Image 1: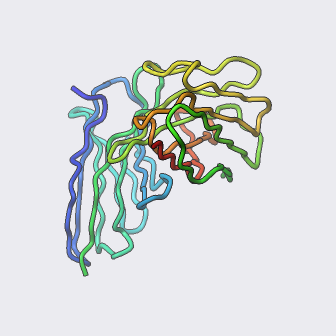
Image 2 (image 1 turned 180 degrees about the vertical axis):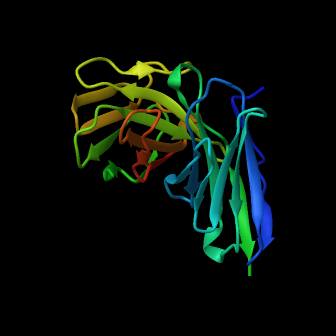
Image 3 (image 1 turned 90 degrees about the horizontal axis):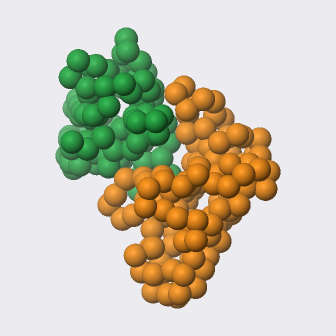
Amino acid sequence: RKEVEQDPGPFNVPEGATVAFNCTYSNSASQSFFWYRQDCRKEPKLLMSVYSSGNEDGRFTAQLNRASQYISLLIRDSKLSDSATYLCVVNGRDDKIIFGKGTRLHILP
Amino acid sequence: SAVISQKPSRDICQRGTSLTIQCQVDSQVTMMFWYRQQPGQSLTLIATANQGSEATYESGFVIDKFPISRPNLTFSTLTVSNMSPEDSSIYLCSVVSAGVNTGELFFGEGSRLTVL
């Protein structure tokens, strides 16, 4: 099992819709989880941290499910500007930061 | 937050040559990282640049191929040596704002390398 796995997509979603995607991780001892956003030909930037109690920031909600070892990202009322690749980031073995391959999201007008 | 300047932003190089990428941070940071992102792939950590000591390389990466310098707490360089087309990639410098477990990773804009 890969350390961090994501559905590569692309997810093609009409503007205004709600979209959600998950990321699974293999190391049950992982403590830190993040969602990063990467626009085309740009560097990744932190979107939000994922706390055990969940985390909401405007239209974005991130949740952690330790029992099933996955984190999720929910985007409500999607905007054209949400089109990007969303990277799941987990601290893996030996505190190494592991990036998922990313999920591509296309918001359609 | 941290502002990272990375250069060159892009380069086209001939096989067998070497290229040095520079990373300058606007504040002193303990941990600096070098990542590679190949087309369609995620970020892969090459090494952690340590100030005052040799860099710590990840599995599959060696010092002879990717020598790293870290002369102070705000600057680092990564050299891609004896390049081949397989080295074509984006190379990203990164720093962490606090501890690895709690801190946010900040990235430079990346250096897009094409090897002919």
